Image (cartoon, rainbow, N blue to C red; front, side, top):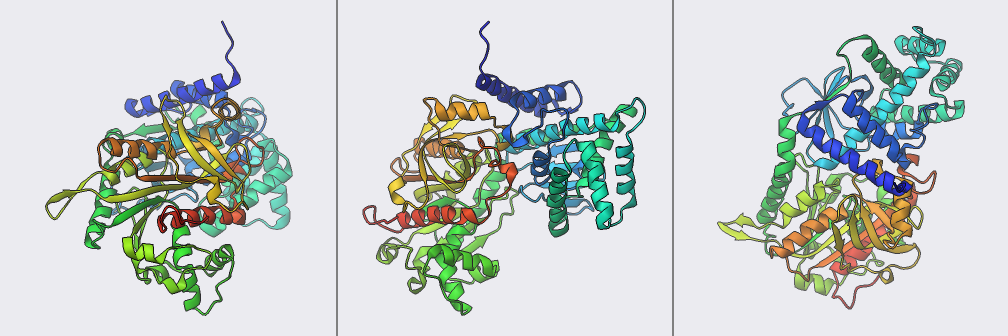
Length: 566
């Protein structure tokens, strides 16, 4: 039998994980330490995602991966022995505490100290993301348990010391803290420096955002849970999937509610017949470029000549949302459907031309002639991108008639992992290749490298739309990059958006010659150690590439095709 290559084994592991995750939601429950849970663990270990670093090394606990997961899971997850995934729970009139993680727009509720309920509104990608994190935490918990029980029927002295520190619940002085971290480093199999870095990182987030319980409690909690599983019958961590979860995935419930509310707003504002330009982006870039100079001038601040310095000045002032909603033509619609997709509605015909930044080349005559409206929709999460775009582009009832939005362009601006470059680079999609399926989409991208000023490296080529950032392997990415695919990056939404756009064209909801634009700024390079998402955020280096893409998209929208400038 021919031996599989590393990339083939990794692709097989991704398929296995996906199939198991899909079947579990139908099965209704599973135990991470049980038979099916062990198969998930085996698949994740075989895949060995870059973001989880040393997860497969049984001797040491993976700390950067732990930071990444804790930032994206609810506070107290380390104490939970029951995890419920559902799609229809109304906790507003209960005493249950709502929890939103630091770096993931997902909602969960603490039902008790040992039970958390995730309300899934964004589709399968969120399920894969949660199950991947649970599997990772269980792998690390088993390592901690083995280190704590180094002797038969007796816990290690280091574990007993950790237990004493957690039980005391008092602030440690500097000497006590250093001793406690040194002791913990032995349990983790890491150096003092590595342990201290993770302690400081989590402690900063705990104090500033109250999004985790600190490294000592986290390690003690997940280790203690495994100890309880080994000593008490039927006390294993169990994950449950409610029937409403499967119904939500099949029926796009939350996306329908989101699109309906947005179209109601467009009708109320009398925008239903105006030329609409849909932009998937963050909530600040278009807003800051268009209204930043005026809000700075209104508070007596000098508007910098450099457009990126102007953006930094706006960010530094931390203007409230009310400052922007007071501007003519700007409407902020906060999501109330559960989709977690907010929208900025911007009527460009009401833009004050006297306060347009001189580096932003907008054709005011063209704007006056066409009166375009921007729908800037917040980032979707994975497969949710198909749901919201599909429902947005569908016709709707207005004044008793069925009408379609007059969509002139769709621009997708997102962050992605770059394969041939570095953080801060820009990627332009020529196609989207769907990982794990035969679905591939050619993109007639209205953006080219010539649209940008050359100060940032621009890579053009296929983008791989992946199942999740936590399911990426160096060998698979290397194959996409170095083989005839010649992919330049990976992201989670582009292929799903394009599937919805292609469907809308086939159904004649939008014209086939409508402009599409796909541009991504590199938040990480998953093939380079120290450049993965787990290594930390972009920081200030992402401002230029983010706003350069926004600037080019705005100039494309507000100019005739032959007059737009980069």
